[in-house]
Image 1 (cartoon, rainbow, N blue to C red):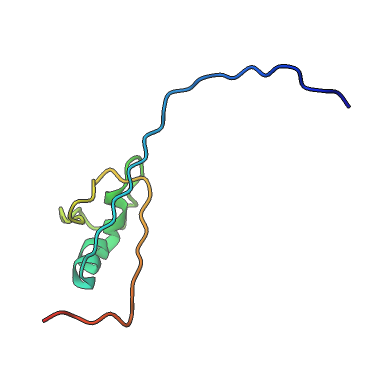
Image 2 (cartoon, helix red, strand yellow):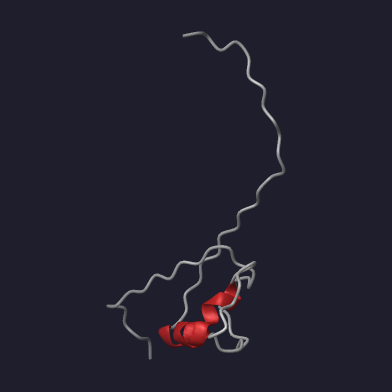
Length: 81
């Protein structure tokens, strides 16, 4: 075993991460994702041939060029009237 005396570090371009959280009604989520609509929300993803044409729907305040998407659903949430 030896002792490390020096380290060479290579600099790379920075990676910018922006996290956007929104709250949407379940009806909006289902309409956006219906028919393979989830494939249109990501950059660099090949849309499968069975997916419907893009409806133009997305989530408010969320960029359409997402790299990661999480859907969290609360089954006990109350609807506001």
